[in-house]
View (cartoon, rainbow, N blue to C red):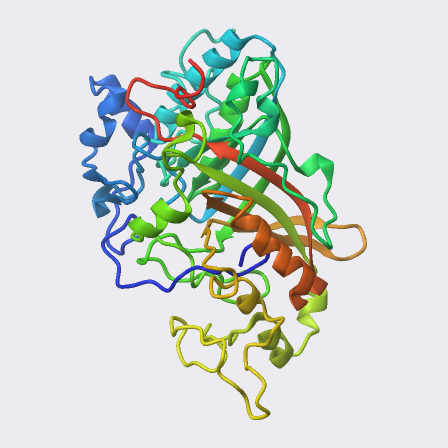
Length: 440
């Protein structure tokens, strides 16, 4: 979905090997990796030391089964976009509190160094948890010491508010880093949106993801403050053809038509910023749309199965488009029912979100389910934390969400409560730091 719980991207073909391919995995804890590094393996060489075979093309990362829990940090694009979607996420947006450009650059360098280490399974700093002076706070919080890297990826994005007069970046703001307009039915909480910098941590272990964000926040103390954050579980899309399609909290398969890492040409067209799109510093990057979507699951649970399927436009069990047999059968918006009306109705979610109905618009989805307790009225505060990457938000996400918010019957069961848009810089080269194409 786009601003709601299913998607609008093309059906996949058979897949190559991926980080989620079946097979035995070598579990390498941070403690073991730390020991290896202490024995003389440089941090930059940890991947080689543990047997990682990496093939970083323009859009696909392949990792051998033996080291499937380590995702390369460096590359043309940031990890955590086309990387095989992990099971857990911790998303955070920071406000920058310092007004010194040098402080911001120093922070980005420190964050990058810590991210390089943590994504290989090491502590945020060498000897961080148990070394140093016992009279001083540890440099690493330590809760991930005995855990493997768990396919941790860390992805940074820059909000429009960073491009003001504090750091001399006003002229560098990408024209496509827009203010997302209000949509019908929005109930946005200002405490759940915006921010100067966002970091998306994805991992197959929630503690690894939380540890990463916790340590970045600790490193940033005095320079940044947390504005808002969101924990997510159970990915709601697949980003490689080797992954099965997951289900959202409405019980439907989600992301069947999502763009995949193997769709190199489609990613170039719909996701990666190209020369001439905007500022040169963003070429190879993308834009991250984040929307917190509250799902009124108690009302949905009292809705008949046939009505649920009509609203979505798919069979709940198989995931097949109405009128078809299998999940990955092509969507046919013209197939009619007994009365001559289309089986996939004019207000069905998959019709409104389809590229056929939107002039070919597509997104790369990477969302997660969430539950944040109850609302105090006996209802779960649960739903979808929608994350998507696109090349031009005004031409891709906005028209899609306008169509959904004004016509989609599913809007009766959901509301958008948080929102953010961030420019995601290109990948980090060895020796560089996050956003060094913008600020050094």
